[in-house]
Length: 521
Image (cartoon, rainbow, N blue to C red; front, side):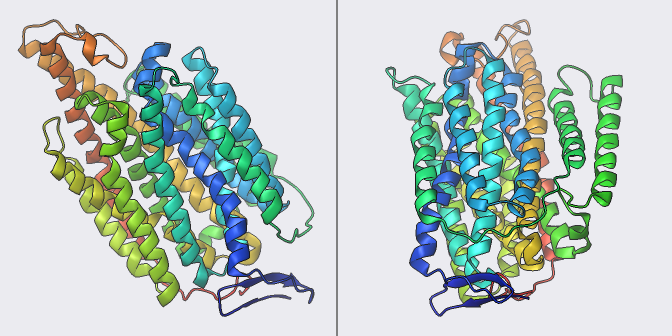
């Protein structure tokens, strides 16, 4: 029989089996263990945000174009997406502590090698391996916290996750901007900078994280994992290349979409027959799990769409430095930080969580709609307001959708349940970056050609790839800046419907009282 207890200060006795009790963890012990986890989460988020501001400079140096810009981000999101449910499943079978440390080792090595890249191909490959480590860190952080803390108290600690998320998100672009703008450092240090944090995380986890290891017969569903990886990968490749390498309605599209659907259908069939599936289909019999995954998918589109393409907007459309670009995104990060921290505290004190999901969905939809209006000459105070509203919405939804699922699933499915929500959020981000990258590329080409035609200048005069504004004649530079500004506003025409779908999903989630103990069924 499984049981647990909760002390007055929020300390939780981990679930026990057969009457063998574990020593309760005090609030201080939980914070000590959290320190290593949060360091790991910090470097995972930092790895993507520190690069976002530096990408125009990196790709100019490595002679990459808009497709490479998208794939440097998408490669990490792709491997993060497909590895997340596998890490989650492994956490239900093996030592969570060992898995977190393994994820950090993978991340550290790939980050160091990424800094040595001499081509976009090498960089994208290293970023893919970074994503495998990041997938483990993002999934396992949620799983370990769920194993230590009851759902009722978890909102309090989710606030810390939100704070670290905001710190890494705002710190990454600033650090990346400073590194790129500092001549004696160079963009390669955008990858090296995460290495000491990752090593520190490994050491701290070894000293502070002590969780009981539940021995279970191990049977990993390799077939299901392979089919799932293949189906998702093919889908992302299609989305990222369609509209550039071939038309959306073309034989290539038909082959890739059909292949992706076939692989995913086979994955569902394999999962239904597997003894230990990567993503147990029984989870989707629960309405909360289904609606939370839909919401997380849509939040991923908004989150990654905003963080990736706003940096490009500020540097190219508004012509600011990488450092200033990071500073100008502060309203988005500030909104995310405030809402995630405050909502976490309120959930812990009241036990009510659905109202925060609905409020977050409304703010996300309104913020996305406002962002559709941005152009090169949009006053910054308006843009700051729009970004703040968007950030407030993301912050209220990000961790609390995971909390809703953790509260709904059994303790034996805690790892796979948590990782499933993170999987769909990252999948939304990967699909969003790929699709929105295709939109930006197509719109920039269209608007640039139209602008040049109005000046009587032949199309293509601005050159290919990521433009170097300083090298362009003034009249062409203005056309390119206007094109990027208009294209960035256009991507939120696709983000806004996704945000509305997230709102509709959370409205229909049934609020279930938060459990007091992690083992309480």
